[in-house]
Amino acid sequence: MSPIGRRRGRGRGGGMSIPPAAGLFPGVISDINAELIELKTDPDESIALGIAMAVVGNVITTLGLNIQRLAHSKQEQEDAIKGGASPGGTSDTVPHQHRNTWWLGVALMILGEVGNFAAYGFAPATLVAPLGAVSVVANAVYASLMLSEEFRMRDVCGTILVIG
Image (cartoon, rainbow, N blue to C red; front, side, top):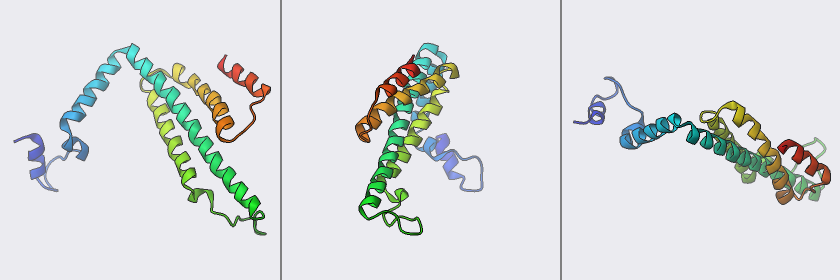
C-alpha cells in the first residue's frame, strides 16, 4: 500500500496527515521541488530568473495601479456628469470598490508584488531592488496610453535619469 493510502486510512485522529495538494499530486510536487533545488544550485539560471521575475512583477504592479487610477477617473467623470457629490460629500455613483475594473487593478497589483517578492529568492537584493525603476518607465507608458496623460519633456528627462 502506498504511503498516501495508509495515511488516508487512519482517519482524523490517528497519525500524520499530508497536505491535500501533495496527496493529489505526489509526483508533481516532488518534481517541482527537485527543479527548484536544481535551479538554486545553478546561480546563472537562478539570477536570470530572479531578474525576469522582478521586471515582470514591476510591470504587472504598475499596470494594476494604472487600472485602479482608470477606475477612479471613470468615477470622477460620472460624478461630474451627475452634478458632483451630494452636500454631505458623498457620491451618488457606484463606489470604486464596487467596480470590477478597480478589483482587477488590485489583483494585478498583488500578483505583481508576489512575483517581485519571489524574485528575491532567486537573485540578490542588490540586483532586484534597483529593478524597481522599471515601474517608472512602465508607468510613463501606461499613463500615456491608458489615461491619456501627456508625456512632457520633463517626464522624458526624469525617466532617463531613473534609467541611467
